[in-house]
Image (cartoon, rainbow, N blue to C red):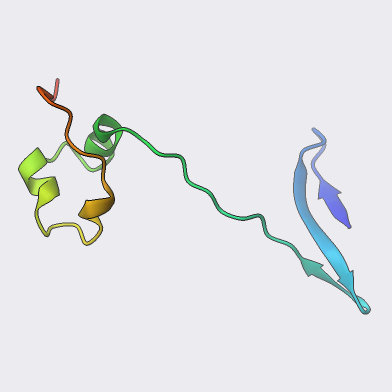
Length: 72
């Protein structure tokens, strides 16, 4: 079973399991973004602040580019 919007874009789909349809989910994926994009999204923190323990997942952030400066 598929449900579409008027623009033909798929909204949701399900598989028949016995007498019930089970909604299916797509795998989630993430796009890698640049250090500058992270810097902007997090409110322009300093590189030292990002390297510290202020974010539990700071190790997942891209490395600061050499000679990088915020224009803001």
